[in-house]
Length: 259
Image (tube, rainbow, N blue to C red; front, side):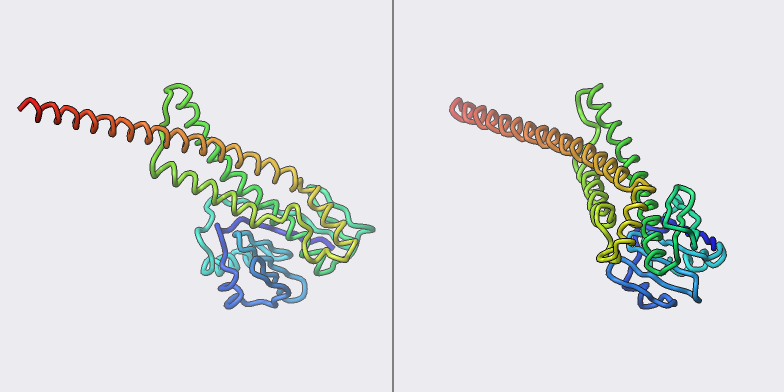
């Protein structure tokens, strides 16, 4: 049997609590980060708080209806659609993973959920890679200006917001991606644990995640340098103000003595 799994970065975040209260479907699993639903007997939807939704065996029309409903529980719909679609084949001799398809020896809810989870993590990585890439490009522009002009073209409140944006992305990556951890459903099940590792390897999740973390670290180091330069400039300005005030006081004292 062949069916397709489709994962999309739908929004910046989805309220799991609100979605759980109002979304209609057979809820198979829930926690603070995820909701896993079944429709009929062979259709599934996996919802993640970081804005990714994964569908299994659900046609395009129904997907659009579900995403339209999820807008009610979401923040900042993603205009730049990032998605992955992969075929899941069941009834194979053994579990086998490739870029084009996932072949499972049997279709169980846990195997399907694990497959959908890793597809969703791959989409989330692409999303964060895009965000990080844009920030790195902007940071490189500032460092180039610093090299050419010997001064920064960013500072004050703008620099603080920039640093905050980078730290926010870094925190989201650490909080939402489970690349280096085995999921709860794999505990005590050798086959599921092996499937999880094969999925991570096929989607190159660990290497992509490490590359992303390195990029974020580079950006953070550059912004820390910018902050130090800004503080040094601010400190120098304060020193000149103090010097000028002292000179004014000295001049004022001489004038008073002269008079």
